[in-house]
Length: 301
Image (cartoon, rainbow, N blue to C red; front, side, top):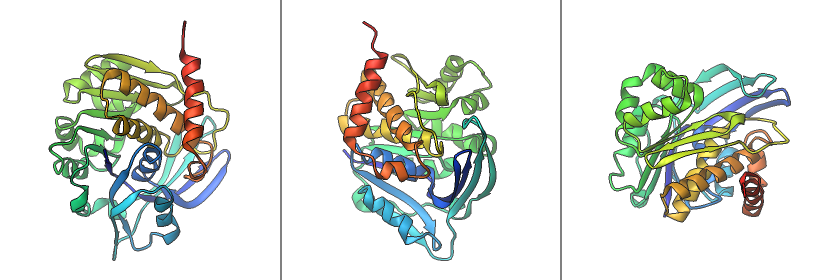
């Protein structure tokens, strides 16, 4: 069944201890869609400005993402982000943000996207997320991502969204900010009380925690040897997770656990190069091989 995503598509400038990448393709929607495309058909609804390079647009075709819902908006400029990662690669400084087209309304959902059974609301303003969510009342699974900016500036809209979704994905600092609780389990419980059936708290190099109404799952991160650019790691993680679930059609706790492992593996490839450069060279066989090694590493007899 098809998976639809909305979120940001951007032009990034990224600085890490490994180097600098100027005006590369980025955005939450971009990383998510690329990661999910290894598992299922992906449909994209988002807007960019007239300054969006054709070379960036061609990348979506390489991943065979359906861009019928991508609008190149005349008179608008593409979302831009400049960030610098510190030596530990976990912490970063946002040097500049230009919301541009991200502050405008979403483009319309194409008619032939209406049968999408799996919906992911990648990181963008909660009002835009809610707009897309409301167009899929019969969706089998709706999951959202968020960030500290929206928790601070659009808290009421975000809390309204949480009542309308099945799952929420966010990192540990965002979970603490949203709930006021520093313990990850307590924070996850508080979020479930807000509406979702499950919550995934990403903990970077320390893995993730899933709290589901049917149980708890904790997974470590894949022990990565190369880290060149962590940008999009969380989005590609979510893409692997949702892509696997959409392909399997199984929403049991066991299946969600397996999807988290696949998300971890896709993210571990993403961080090996700037932007989507490693993902462009990635194959499903490489994903499955690394997954098998990861599963073996976690097995206790």
